[in-house]
Every structure is written in structure tokens, then in C-alpha cells.
Length: 295
Image 1: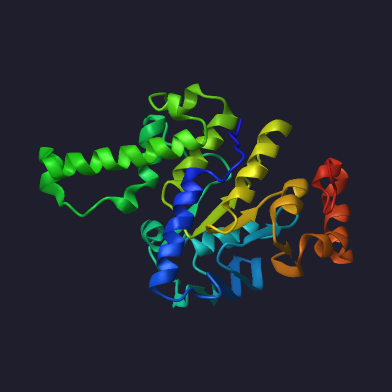
Image 2: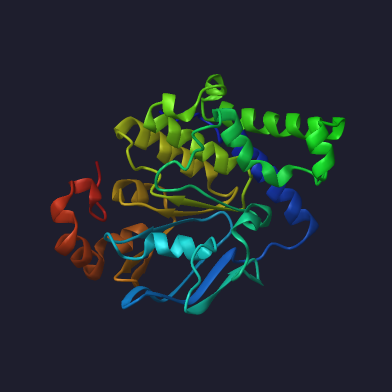
């Protein structure tokens, strides 16, 4: 289960402290990420059609829609996996389009995947250390190969960061285990720790509730709410009860187009949203999958 606490996690608190230090040094932009007119086509299929949205620092933004609406495609464009036919991305006022995916963490952007994306051959600790790579000092190939003191110090520092992230999610005792030996819900927690250890300014969560039961879902919601204010969170999720309980605003995609946006209560009553879900998806799901439904 996701470990919850009565106060924000230390990983989040650390991010808050860092964010405040940055604010003291320089003015914060009013918008973290701006998406303007994104269009993506795969052959004759339009996955995104002139999509525009923005997320503010510290905000939790939900992106919802029926299957095939373009939600994950949007994440893949932001992360540089897919090049759009048209449109622009701006991250803190700078053009993001064309940035290599391996540079995103250093820019302050982290992402979880629909599954877990954990490396089967690495231990839990080593998997989370991968997320902390942005903090490794450039040491060159030779020091790392020879195991020189500076390289050893960096490795210990990354391991300490990873252990702290695991501790906050209740997984520190699993550090030496391989992912495949753990329940799926625990693997999802480790994947979240790997994203949080990077101390991102923007966290992209791609269906984090997938495969979770009711207790884990409640603790995930508490975890996301604890992150509010310390980083921007963009959440793609089918579990509408989770989306409506944690998001400040919601954007709804249908057939690649934005059909509604606003606060959760407003979006949950929008006739176009109800039609999109009730007409093609909610009739196949539980009441908790419908906009505005509560469990």
C-alpha cells in the first residue's frame, strides 16, 4: 500500500524548501508548462487535434477522457518521444520542443509510466537511484571506471537520496529486493519514488491508480494532495473518483480534442463530458469511472 502520513512527505518538503530558495533568488514564472496548438497524426488517425493547455507551479491538473482520447500521446509529446506535426511546448518560458528525453530530469520534469517501467535486473534501491542521476556531478569516464574517491562519494550520495525517497513511501526495507519479487502495488510505489527522488518541478503521472485496490487508491490520493504546492502535477487517470478528489483543474480530451476544462465540479456536470463517458465508456465501467462519481 501507499504509505501515508499526517504531514507532507520529506521528499515533498525538500522540494518545497528548494522551490522557496529558488523563489528568493529569482521571480517564479506564472506558468510552468504551456502547450499551444499540438497536433499529432499517425497515418490517417489524428491523435491530438489543436490541443492547448497550461499548468501553473504547484497545481494538480487532471487530463481525462475515454480510451483513445490522446492522453498518453500528450505525455509522449511533452517527454519528446513523439514529434508533433504542429504546435509548441514551452517550459518556464523556454521552448521545449526537440529536447532530448534524457535531459528532461535536469530540466525538472519527471514521469511515471502506465505500468511500472522498473528495470528487472536492478534492485529496488538501484532503480530509484536511476531517478536521482540529475544530482550526479560530472566526473568523467575514467574516475567512475577506476572507482576513484569522488565517484564513490557520488554513488553514496545518490544511494542516500534513493533510500530517503523509499523511506518516505514505506519501502526502505525492500531496497535489496528485485522488482519482480514484489506485489504490483508495491512496484507502483517504487516507480513513484524513482520519479520523486529527482525532486521535479513538474511530475507527470500516467494512470498511477492502475492495478490498485481501494486502500491503495486512498493513500495514493493523499500522496498526490501532499505534493500540491511543492511541484506541478499533471495526472492522466481513468479513475474519476481519484481525479475529482485531488485535482485543482481538469482538462477533458475526446478524439484528440479538448472538449472541456475547468474545476472538477464544473467538468463533472458538463454535458459533453457526460456524453463522451456515458456514451462510450462508463456503461462498461463502474460508477467510480464516471465524472463526478464518488465511492
